[in-house]
Length: 231
Image (cartoon, rainbow, N blue to C red; front, side, top):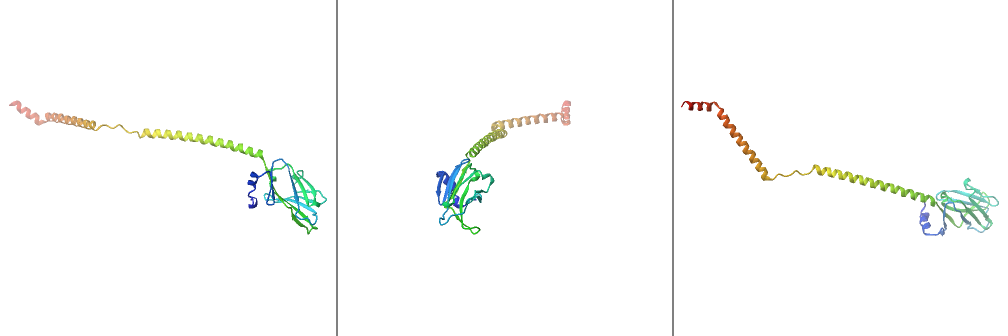
């Protein structure tokens, strides 16, 4: 995790030039595959150092290279041996370095240490400045942006299709529901009453005719009619 001391680094890269110094730290902004030059100067001038070390911390904590006076520098990582160039000025308490073919993984805080005294009781003195190197990969960011844009288009198209489908289904359901609940025509009251009266009249007439026929066919009516015949 980034410490509070370096939390403002991204903001500084946005509002400052590619190289700036702030609070004992030099902020350097570079693009991938470019190079960078840094100079480490010892804070102690009383005696001459016999060795020098470049280290990194924050994102990775490890030694980058070690330089002993009168010898070639020792590079910690094999793949970095062709990317580091060291100009030894230990007698002047200064070492100049060039890092070429910068990659995104080179982003980190770099600091120097000057070694004084005799081994193994040497004394380590830090350099005056630390270097926060930020390497940006523009091509990678452009690719990511275009990918995000295409993804946004796909999501938007899918959302539109889903909206059309939902609208179509809702319209069909509403039409079907309205057809089911359509009210029946209301028959006027006077028509109902007329119909009831007509039905009642027909029923009464039918019952009267039936009674007359039954009476005519009954034995009593027959006898009564026969008696009248003899009279």
